[in-house]
Amino acid sequence: MHLWSWSGDARACHVRTIPVLLLTLLAVALPVTAQIPLALWPSDGPQEGPRIQGHRVVWHQFMAEFGDYDVVVADVNRLDEIQVQVLSLPGDQMHPDAWGRRVVWQEYVLKDEFGDWDINGADLGDWTNPRFFAVSGVIDNDEQFPAISGNTVLWQDGLVDHYDIFAADITDPNWPLEFVVAAFEGSQQRPAVDRTRAVWQDNFHGDWDVYASDIWLRDQPMEFIVTPFADQQTAPTISGNRVVWQDDLAGDWDLFASILAEDGVVEHFPIAATEGNQVNARIEGPLVVWQDDRFGHWDIFLYNLNTGQEFRLTEDPADQTRPDIDGDLVVWQDNRLGSWDVFVLRLASSMLAE
Figure 1 (cartoon, helix red, strand yellow):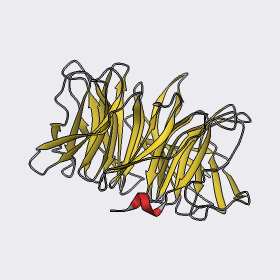
Figure 2 (cartoon, rainbow, N blue to C red):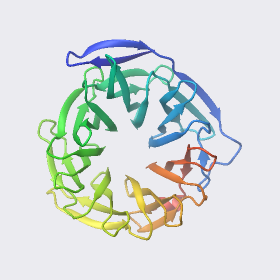
Figure 3 (tube, rainbow, N blue to C red):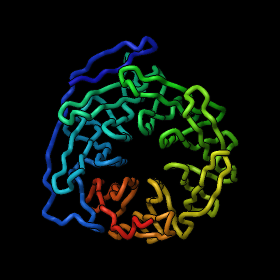
Figure 4 (cartoon, rainbow, N blue to C red):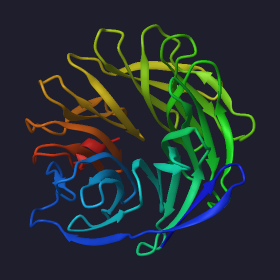
């Protein structure tokens, strides 16, 4: 297998031969029903930052045998027979995201004794033979925290304390078409994207606010502010016309949501504004998940925007953090087994009610 990577502005192609590990795992003899969390692939190396889209779960994991972080992909189409693939590449690959058959990540690449973070990806249309491609690799510049939706990949791009938001159309992954989403004074960081709408956190006004942009016209993104408030609004996530973010107005972190209208008018309302901290939210349709320490340790909670109901998904005294959701499946990282493992939970039908 090969990884195609760009080098400099000339966009020259280079090939690296790499191993890829393919494993088929039989889950323990445990009924996979609602409210029974399942560890996807328990192992010694910490598994962090899970993302789910469709029946693919991705995360980064430290592999002691290789001495670096690699991207792991699990096919959870059948929870009683989980296929796991380790994309074992030289150097560190971290913070993956997935859409359909494609996975993207940030990768630390050495160039002439110096290194920086680039964005690379793989097409898993052929599960046993992934096709690797480069998304962005500007020399002496860090591209980090990619997010993908359809054929669009976003990331933060720049140097410490000054990042911009860039994107690429990867309809043809051999020739990604880059464009600027937000490049202003201050720093624009941690983008999220759903179809043609992007959101990010931005300190243009001196504190962190959430901004959004319609990126349907690649050369004319339509940007507007979502949270013109004091204090800090960070870590936005988006699904359709709904945006969720965390806000420290009350002295701890709470979750709020916005409804975006076609004319840019924004409606705001609270999701979880209770004791403790509610952070790292993810939204899919009307369902929002987050990590919450109101009971003294981190648990995973769920809120249904249509019914106004909140559910506590985990009660284990260990920590459960960094959740994600797609359909009726929720994933998170969990240290109940001694180190961070990725867990999955199928939601009860009552939680999905519209």
